[in-house]
Image 1 (cartoon, rainbow, N blue to C red):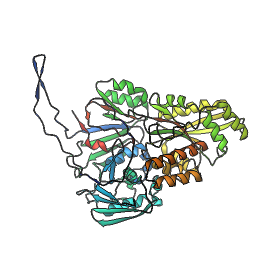
Image 2 (cartoon, rainbow, N blue to C red; image 1 turned 30 degrees about the horizontal axis):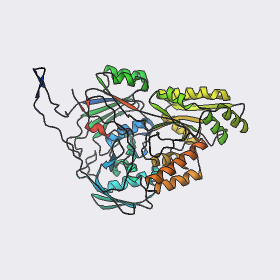
Image 3 (cartoon, rainbow, N blue to C red; image 1 turned 90 degrees about the vertical axis):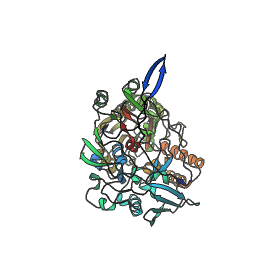
Image 4 (tube, rainbow, N blue to C red; image 1 turned 60 degrees about the vertical axis):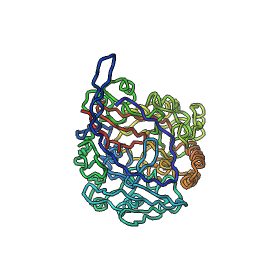
Length: 534
């Protein structure tokens, strides 16, 4: 496979009737063709198509699932999504450009008023325990993720859910109490995976996950490796090609790239940006990424419930003091884009491309004086361990706030510790990345509205809540874009979330790994179609 990058495209959903059967078949072996070059006859073999068998050795950064397990309803980080997308499946799936296509549902029909979605299910789907999947499982799974007791980070995305109706074993209807245009996008995420009730009822489902995906978990050594074996009764013909995927973890950038270069691994997720150019020139490696700015959002979360950060003037002073271009360059180099007023890249249809903040240290100093903090104060920054670029970003923030007398100390901890501190409000600031979203509702409902599952700043704005509610029911994309732009202006002026930069992600593979498809939204189900040309 030649090195290439897949472009990101603007994302839009319409109300459509989709009828598509998903089928994958192996290509037959073909005889060599005869090519004449400079009068010399050369035998050039035609590619034979996918080969079955083999183990893919994949390395990620950190096993965040060591704290939370692999319950898809509670998935919130990349390592959970990587594994979850192989073990579990959803009613619909998403393409790299954001188009919604069939998954466990082979078709769907949306009512004229946008309040009912009727899904016809694929036939022959079974869970890894051997039981057939039915519409009852869909009802259970959707109602479960919408239940506050499940504590899903995407709970707010289901506030329009009225009921789930089982028509028969193969047909289910989702009823809404108000139009919700991002519903299909919401249902494509692994948190909406269809799971078997009897397995969830067992103790610690997150440690013994059972889904309908192309691979099933056969071993988990916490913080060390996941072993996934091909599911022999997978419903899509001839898939997967691989016999096994072994996922290991390493947070050291140099060690990770050395493992790829030496051939100790076949695939590396999130290649450190300092090595991207060198890999692009390698004849034995492939590099996959986006040719437009990516969707990952780096930001600084400030605790609005803890003095002095409960004073908006202090938060605004911090936002004013930062040089985002320098932060982006230090963190992610040329593959980054400074952002002060948006959680979306500049190309996105809902991006707010106005600069809410530009660096002005003198104005920042004046705001601190007004807030009675002219002498400065100590400030602790939490950073999730294992992500070198976030540590570099935190160190740059430390230097940039020093002229204001803000003495920043940096503490790195595993994700579970950081998440616990955030939930308890036991922090000053967190340097954090939020993963890609195509539809802005996903980020807004998780993060910015009052009481959202990832609203670690404990931010609350009646105006933001109002705009979020208006945008979620609007069906016209132009109207939605205007509402989301205003929402972002309001939220970032309040500086509970200090936007820093967007950046690209890259995956590196050995040249013999074939048919990998890069998804900018951290989606890994394409691994079911990957094969090894060895």
